[in-house]
Image (cartoon, rainbow, N blue to C red; front, side, top):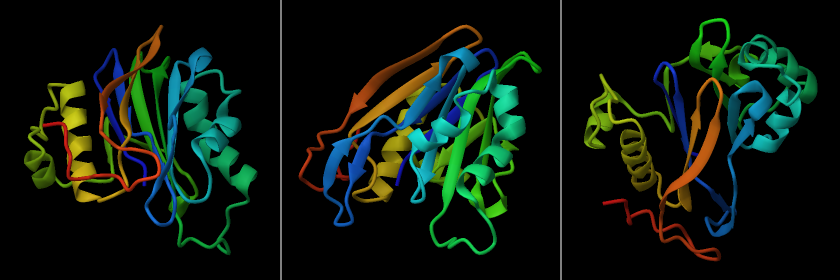
Length: 206
């Protein structure tokens, strides 16, 4: 499971992802960069699910000139590349989340797309994956109506997701910030996880 949390704030957008890569036994085997940037398009894209990696999604979208083109063509690109149809085994899902500068709307926007409806894009100013209810967001120490503390709120939410999805979210919390002219990435937290061991989900940011 990959944690991807997104928040649009007008002139900038935030995406927070974890870095753990683990096997079927839950043993951490590697650290991965799960948010892939497209600097020429002022966009970052991430994916979660068993059918393909973030890099594969990047391969489908790297020639987009901007966020708006990616949103308009994402369904066609993914369906064509992976021949998704009603006969496909859907027991494993695929979610794609993109965050980028919209020249059309002159602000940072985000969309979510999944295999269940043919990768049709759905706009979302706030996207939490794994999904949390408003009550769970409150339990994480965040006001679900505001998210007015940006990076801190997203990290608190990821820490809650980690603790409630044992052995699946960890490594480092990588923050990607998108504006009209810049994309930056930085590690804002590291959990004490080790390769060759199960993720110690009980250990939090607190």
